[in-house]
Image (tube, rainbow, N blue to C red; front, side):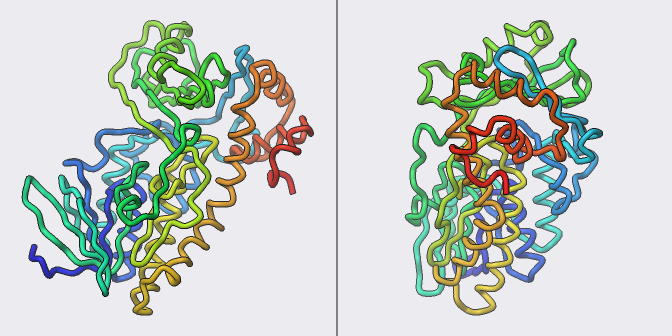
Length: 395
C-alpha cells in the first residue's frame, strides 16, 4: 500500500461500532478501511455478551453467533428476593446471549462483503489534519505507512486515541467508568439457566450489579461491575465473594477470566470535529445504567456511515456539517442515555434497605415490555418519590 493511497473513510477499531460503520459506508459506495490493532477480530472478548432482540432490526444474528435465547430476566434484591420479567407475560422480547467473538467476526465479514478493506494487527499511531482531510500513520509489525482519508472514524473504545489526539475526548471520572470482572463458568447447577440473572446491593456490587448470563450446557458468564470510587476493593474481590456465597456456583469451574472497564457516563455532547467522528464507547454511547453498548454502537455506526456519505457527496467534511451526526445520534440514543445516567446516579446512592423496598414494590407488577425503561417507569409509578429525582420516564 503506497503513501498516496486515499480512502473516503478510515475507521480505527474493528468492534461492532467500527464494523457496522464500515458496512454502511461501503454499501453507500465509500472507499473504506477498517484498522484493528489486534490480530483477530473479536478476541479477547471483553463483554458479558447480552443484547436485546431489537438488534435484529439492524443485524441478522447468525445461528453460530447465538449462545442462548433467554425467556426472561430475574432481578434480585440485596435480601435475595426477586422479581421476574417474563417474555410470555409481557408479549415482548427479552434478549440473546451472544458468542461475541463469532458475532464480531460476522459483522466484519459483512463489511468486507460490502466492499470495505480490513487491516489486522495494525495500530493507528498518529493523525494529522490536512487541507483535504486526515493523514493517518499506521504501524504493522514495525513497519509504518501513511494514508490519506477524507473522514476519520474513532471506534477505538473507552480510552479512544483518536478522540484524545483530535481533542474531542474528555477523560472519564471515577464515577463514570465501571470496573468489571467476569468468569466464564461451567458446571452450574441449581439455578434456572433460561433466565438472565441480575443482583443489586451495596454488599454485592457497590455502584453496580452482578450478573449471570447463561450460554447453554450449564455454562454462563458470571460477572460483576462496580464503581471504584465507592470501595477500596477490586471487582475481582467482589466477584470471588459473589461466587463463594452461592451454592449453585460453588462447584462450578472457571474456564476463562475477563477484566475491563465499561463507561457509564452521560453521552458526549460533541463527538465530531473537522473530518472526524467518534462512535461506540469512544463517544460514551453505552447505556449508563446497564453498561450495555452493542445495540447503541450499531445504531450510531449506521448514522455515522450515512453522514459520512452525505458529507463526502457535499464535499464538506467540516465540523459544522458533521454535527448532523451529533444531532441524529443524540436523538436516537442520547436522550435515553442521559435519562438512564440520572437513574444510575440515583440508584447508586440508595441503601440496601431502600433497594429491598423498591424491588418488593414490583412483585405484583405485570410488565408491558422487557426493558430498563419499563422497569424504571414501574418503579416510579409504585414509588412516586422517585419522580422528583428522575425526569422523563413517564409521559
